[in-house]
Length: 101
Image (cartoon, rainbow, N blue to C red; front, side, top):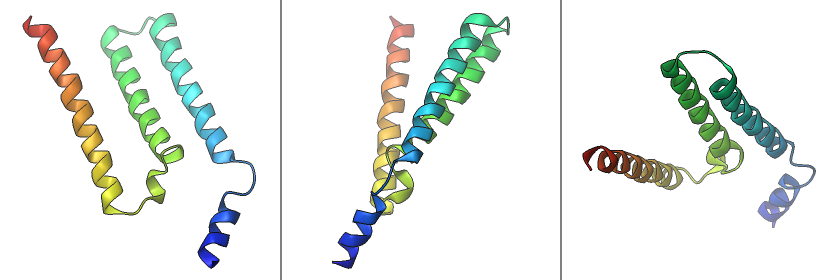
């Protein structure tokens, strides 16, 4: 019963962390768009900056929306690592197929 009451008080109030995460995601997205469209930075630098901002946004969303820091421990982290592995295999496999056709 005490655990249920603790969970009920945890979800009480306005979710400021979700709003902050959403606003930061928008800022990172529009910053990447601005850098890609309206700057004269060399292409390689633009791609590097966009990839860095994409990684920051992915971590931000994992922590803010997917509650990575509130997990059950090892099982949640293994599931996240497995998801990254599947995503990497998909992206690398797609690029490999594009360049070998």
